[in-house]
Structure formats: C-alpha cells, structure tokens
Image 1: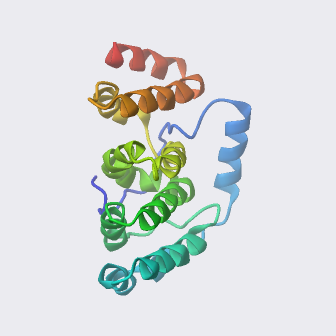
Image 2 (image 1 turned 45 degrees about the vertical axis):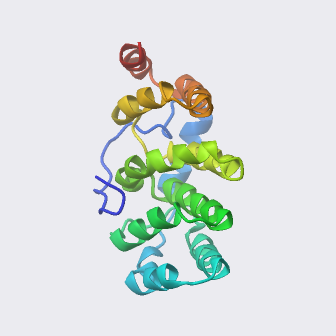
Length: 201
C-alpha cells in the first residue's frame, strides 16, 4: 500500500514496535487496552483543501498543530484517510521548515497511535522521511519520526529499503540508517535477526 491509500485492518503481525522486551510488552498491552478515539473523520477533504490552499506558512502550521492536538491520544480508531495521507505527504515536501517539522511530528504520532493500521502509509512515506535526515533543520524531527515509525512497520517488509539506504550515496543517510537499525536489532526476535543478516549480508 502506498501513502494515501486505506490501510488494512490489523492482523497478527510482528511489528518493530512489538518487541519481546518486558517494557515493550507492557507498552503494547497498554496500547491494546486503550480505548479507540475516532478523530480522523474530522480531517477529511474540507480540512485538507484548506491546508493545501493556504497561502501563508503560518496558516499551514496552525492547521497541522490543530491536527496534532487532536491525534495526541494513545490509540486512534482505524478509519480510511486517503486525502489526509496525500496532504501529509505533500506538506512533508513544503519549502518552509516549520511546516515540514510539524508534518514529521504528525506522522510520528499517527504511527504510534494507529500502529499496524498506519503500516501501509509508513512504507510509502519512509523514503521521504529518510531524506529529511540530510536537512540540518529537520534532522532532529526526522529522527524522532523514524523512531516512531517502528510502531507501525514490519521490518521483514522493509529490509530491501533499509539495504538501499545503507548503500546510499549520502554518508549522512548511511550513518543514520545504520544507527537506526542497530537500535532495532536488540528488540528483534532471533528469526528476524537472522533474516536481517541474510538480506543485509
């Protein structure tokens, strides 16, 4: 699934965020026990149109902060949000760094609060977030966003993309990706660690 397409309902997936460590298991149980909050329907076509048509960066920032406040819950009810997905992807490529950083915060929160329901979007937006590592003014938020994306991804589905980034022409991306992956490996199952070794050589 690409960013902007409806994600499938959650299945019994092994997520990066679903680590075997006790603290991670506790966090997972807390998430599953949390009540689902329906917020996405409030940010449909009309809201997205207002953001896209906004002339000033401050208007875009205010809209994104409105969205971020609404989605800052532990668990978001899974609902289709194709137009919102497209809008977020567009804003991530905005010329204003404040808008970009706000967008990265939104992506990270959606990943944490939707988990596997955000997986399709995460895989589609992964490349765009990684590229923000090269922007000094966005690198910090990009790192936080990448750390949040692990809650919504299956590493098994990302190995080829990760391998590409480990061979990227940018030394910054290579180093950041290596660090990101190193932080994930201790949380992975033995089988997944073996798969990482096989694919990454």
